[in-house]
View 1 (cartoon, rainbow, N blue to C red):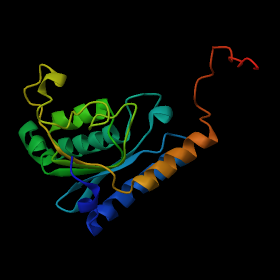
View 2 (view 1 turned 90 degrees about the horizontal axis):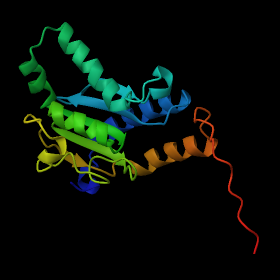
View 3 (view 1 turned 180 degrees about the vertical axis):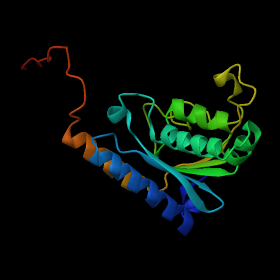
Length: 190
């Protein structure tokens, strides 16, 4: 994984700021605040934010939302599967939190060129924290898919801003979290 210090160019920071804005929209909607933008040739071509609660679909992570926007757009434009693959191979993703295993696998399958992310995802990260699905030598992790490709990945870009948004979400409590069915465990007094 590349170092975040070298990634702190003005363009990269500007694109990550747009991803942060998407995460703020997710937070306002009481979703886990993760946002992203896809960039091709220095221009934002799609954005996404977490929407699993709003859509009642656990797969509606920011990356998947943006991928669907691109697929619909390119389908309307009449692009072939090969042309869509070529387009994805030129895209760079900026996302506020390390893609989870599901999203990292999807990004690898579509053949994204590069990913910049803010903070690590220590529970579900697919770009080095738990699994390294961005690595081209992780072929066996996505078995049966000869089209799987690796992608360049750089973490730590505007990480403190991303962490701050996540902290805000979890400190306010998640009103959409299921109620626990377990009784509270009382610690014995010494």
